[in-house]
Amino acid sequence: MDIKRVAIDAVNETIVMTVVHMDYKGQVAKRINEKMPLATVKGFRKGAVPKDLVEKQYGKAIKQEEVQKVVDLALERFVQSERLNLLGTPLPKVNEAFSWDAEELVFEYEIGLVPDFTLDLEAKNDIVKYVVSADAKLIEGQVERIQKQFGTAIPQEVVAADSDVTGTFANEEKGINNATTIAADLFKDKATFDLFIGKKVGDVVTVNTKGLFEDAHQLMDVMKVNHDDVHTLDVDVAFTIEAINTAELAELNQELFDKLFGAGTVSSLEELKAKIKEDAESQFATQADQKLLGDVTEFLIESTKFDLPAEFLKKWLQTVGEKKLSPEEAEVEYTRSEKGLRFQLIEGRAMAQSDIKITFEDLKTFTTKNIRQQMAQFGQTNPTDEEVQGIVARVLSNQDEVKRLSDQVVAEKLLELFKEKANPTTKEVTYDEFIAASYGE
Image (cartoon, rainbow, N blue to C red):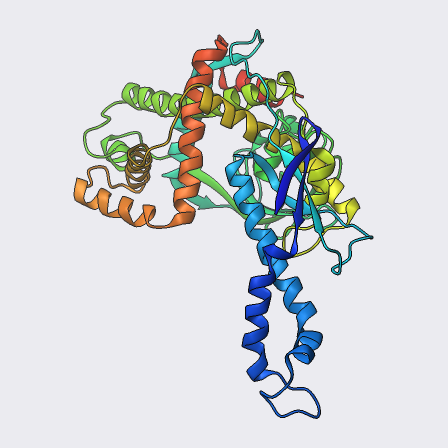
C-alpha cells in the first residue's frame, strides 16, 4: 500500500491511499473459505457449492469489507505515525470514477489541520482588572435586607408605600412568567410603584419593561429576561398581586448575628457591616476575575490571527452527531462555534507555551476547596478531613464531574497566567460602577 499526504494549504491536506491486490487478497480468500460450508445456492446442497459460485455470490461484498478494514487501519496508523494534529476527523472524498474492479484502488481523505500560530500573551492591551469595593450604600441596603428576611411579615389588605408585594410578572408572547417580590425602591421611577398603591390581592398592574429599572439588567433577575434582550425589550408586562406584606424588621442583636454567622463570630453592628463588606467583596472578586478572563479571552481571539480549515469543518459538521446537518445548518453551526474553537486552540497553545499541566493532585485540591465551601454554605463549618475526602472521592469517581472540574482548574490556572502576562491596568470601583463597566447601557 502506498500512502502520501498532498498539501492544499497550511491547514488543509488530502491523504491519498493506493491499495493493491496484495494488501487484501489473503484475508478475502480466508473469508471465502469460511463462507463455503455455510453458502447456499439454488441447485446445490448447503456446503457443497463450488468455490467459483461462492466467490461470484459473496466475493464482491467480502472484498469491499476487507479493503475498508485495511484502509481504516492504515489511515489510523498513518495519522499516528505522522503525528498529525487534526481538527475533526478525516472525510472520504467521493470519486465518481472509482471502480472496485480496478487493479489499484485509490482512496482519498480530506483532513483539516490545527493551524500553527504565534501567541503573544504580553501584547499591548487596554484590559482592566477591576477591584470592586462594597460602599456604604450597598452595605446599609444589605443590613436592611437581612432585617427584612429575618423579621416578621405582617399581611396587609392593600398596598402601601412601605409594602412588599409578591406576585408574578407575565407576558405570554415573550415567555415571561416569573414570581418575585417587589418594593418601592425596586423601580427607577417612584411613580411606577405608585401604580400599585391601594391595590389588593388578585389585582393586576401593567408596567412597561423599557426604562423600568435603574439598571436594565435587573430584568434578568426580576423577569428572567435573556441578557441579549435587556436593552431592547419594550413590552407591557402584567403583574398579578398574590400577597401584600409589611415587614417588622428583625432586631440587630446577638441572636440574629449567631444565626447568620455562627456563635460569637459577629457581636456588633460594626462587625456585621465589616462581615458583609468582606463577604461581598469576596464575591465581587470572583465576578471581577470572571470579567477579566472574558476580556482577555476576547482580546486574544481578536489579536491572534490564524486560518482555520473552515470549509472542511463545515463539511465535517454535516457528518457528526445523531442528526445529520444540511449544508445550511452546518454553516450556522460553524459560525456559532468558531469563536469557541479559536479560543480552545489559543488555550491549548497558552498552556503548552507556559508548561501548564493539570495533575490529579491539582484536581483533588480544587475539589476539596469547593466541597468545604459548599458545606460551609449549609452550616457545616468544621467538617472532618475524613468526611470531606469521602465526598471528594465520590465526586472524582464520576467522569463527567472530573471533566467539569478539570475545565474549572484549567480556567483558574489560565486566569493566573493572564493576570501575570497580560499585565492589566488595575482600577478600583464600586459595585454599581463595575456593573456599568461589565454590561453598560
